[in-house]
Amino acid sequence: TILLKHASSCPQSAMAVEQLFRDAGVPPGVYTNLFVRGRDVGKIIDDSRVQGASLTGSERAGVSLGEIAGRNVKKSVLELGGSDPFVVLDGHNLERTVYAAFLGRMGNTGQCCVAAKRFIVLADVHDAFVAGLRDRMSEVRPGDPADPATTLGPLSSEAAAELLMEQVRDAVDKGATVVLGGGRPDLPGAFVEPTLLTDVTPDMRAYREELFGPVATVYRVADEDEAVALANTSPYGLGGAVFAADPERARGVADRLEAGMVWINHPTASRPELPFGGIKRSGYGRELGDVGIVEFANRKLVRSVDADAPIEEVLG
Image 1 (cartoon, one colour):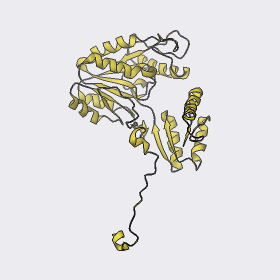
Image 2 (cartoon, helix red, strand yellow; image 1 turned 180 degrees about the vertical axis):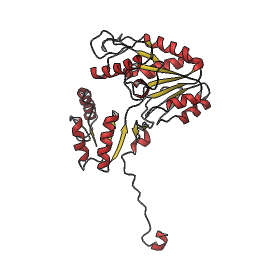
Image 3 (cartoon, helix red, strand yellow; image 1 turned 30 degrees about the vertical axis):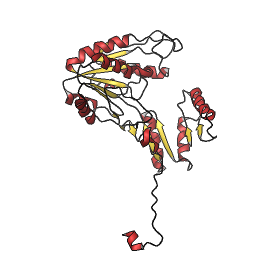
Image 4 (cartoon, rainbow, N blue to C red; image 1 turned 120 degrees about the vertical axis):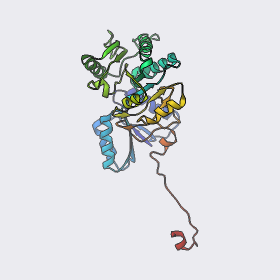
């Protein structure tokens, strides 16, 4: 049975999900929404009837939940933030690679934990990649989500939009190059322009923080070793992607990335049949797939011995 506290910003979709369970004939109490304040979640986890806790959300929320679950000796799974690297090793079928980068960054207006956020590109294809991604991102049209012509919606809140703009302004003030965007369109709502930054350095917030919205950063590297080193500087370790014509070369780089999931020649994604989760500040444990199914199961051992078997043999 599941007690689910959605983000406070989406009560109507929470009720719609609960109604789907009712419509499917699930008995009452198997799935229940909890419309409670975040600070009250700890009281629920403290309850002896609650056997475990799983959270998808911010690093701060994950730290709090993990602490409470640990204090109660209860299993927890945390799926937190991400700053996924998208490593480009060559120019093979670059148009496809750029399109994959565009989809990986702009899906859900860039508001996805496993969105491609840091594009790490070998020097010989860097400029062509940047130009291609700029052209793709410039075609995006922000507007009313109900308008079929709209291809970029607003962020989840005004606070989210302003946080993203603070990160962009910090990078620009410290010397980052704005290839595209960098501001907010003159529209009602929490919109941020599709933004492409280069020349991002370690002293900038955009280098170490998650950019949760339509902002991409592109880095130029000399070789695979530099690409891997840069990818692994992030405190996060959720997903990643490697693009290359040679699958063995791509697999070698993928094996060296500090991440819970790496996709080759495909932006990081989620599939119901595949385990999903990360390492480092991105959390622990896995959702989905057969691994996710047993995260909260009691994998009990039951061994049967014949009632007339000599005890010394059983113990031996």
